[in-house]
Image (cartoon, rainbow, N blue to C red; front, top):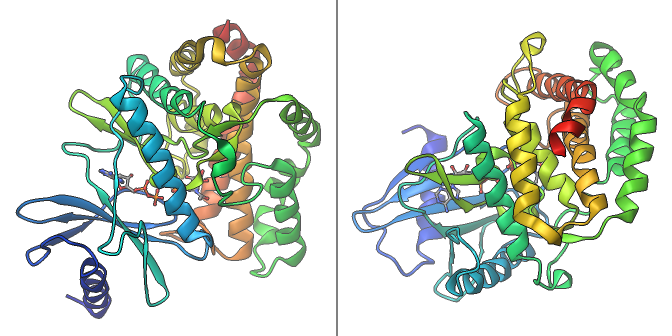
Length: 359
Ligand code: ADP
Ligand code: GN1
Ligand code: MG
């Protein structure tokens, strides 16, 4: 064990002393491909848990974050118990003093129930699977349609506000603190040239109703079980009042490309139209009359917006020196930005076909 691993083990032991379970024999392994938090699986002879170190630099309202998740879980569990929510609701485990999240030194941690026999996928393989994915995320928002949105703390202000994200990009470009601008000037110019699309997003956003949305519906925030069936929505960190087009758009972003988010062979990127059709028809059908005509129309705007907005966020982070998203290689955020902007371009080009598939 190196020093880093030893220090992590010591921290985790201290964290676990706060819980009423026997962790004397515990195996710790890393979990998932999240870009923000550090997540571990804990296995004891009797139980399995998920332990998460919440990134406090990004989630500055850490206590509110776990308290939001608690409120949502209580609501979803009631729905489930009355037969109105088909998925599992992974519970946060309360500490000995009843807390949903605990602070050790300067770090925040929480313990969660591990859903048995579950795993995540990074890619959707068939339209049938895409249909299940869309229904699962739609069931999640539908079950929260009578949740009082004002009871949720806003964890990250202006999270999907494209004007805010463009201002952040403009600032990063003006400062160019890492001297990286010259390598990505063309991409920056491309982003700023999308003003008419941005204006359209701003205009339609004002006319759409707020829902409690997940705001990070990438495919690996869904747990699957035997037979690749979705069994739980996870990663509730950014659940806030928001727009359905954002949740739908992030599903398209992570299900409809044949390439991973950070794949550098962007010339080989194609949009999987059969997957798109399965996503949109099942998302709309699950909402049924809970979705307005304008919301239905907005889903295609969301399909363009999410690759674009996340592409600009990766580009901003690249210019700022990779402070936000975890990176594992040089230019990782730039690679992600190039790939997401390419996906945005493909979705825009395919728009006439997407509109037909949405009918
Ligand atoms: P991040 O915010 O870093 O994306 P997540 O909450 O998505 O963190 O968790 C990271 C990974 O941990 C997930 O992709 C999944 O593999 C696993 N995971 C999280 N919660 C659970 C759970 N309750 N049961 C089983 N696995 C889980
Ligand atoms: C982050 O935490 P994770 O990896 O599920 C990010 C999302 C991005 C995503 C891109 C709080 O999600 O907004 O879409 O990376 N989460 C936050 O993969 O910024
Ligand atoms: Mg996640």
